Length: 120
Image 1 (cartoon, one colour):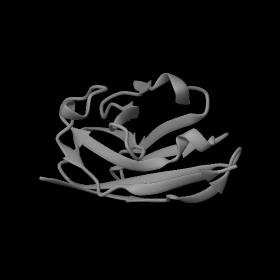
Image 2: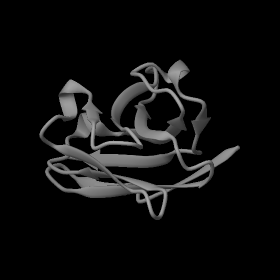
Image 3: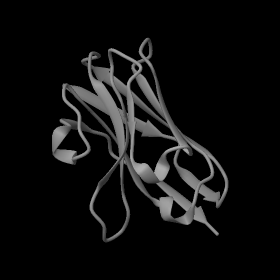
């Protein structure tokens, strides 16, 4: 079993920055990533980082603004979000698993979510 604990959400003005963290306990050799879900919308892929390499993947709208990184020693993944826009407002979920993809069904483990709100 893997447990994921997220932190770092909050309220920020447009153009500002936030850093989300997700600490995993239990199994360590897993891919980790982030999804987000805005009110009335489906959960969507944001970014992923593979456990065994530096390979990353990003959703098009966050490329160049968000950076995913991980500290394997701490089994923690981070999402640095810069140049935030109001449309980035959502609940952000950490995901982990032995497989990965841009669909939520590809991931086995989920965190509880952390709210990110970007105001004008």
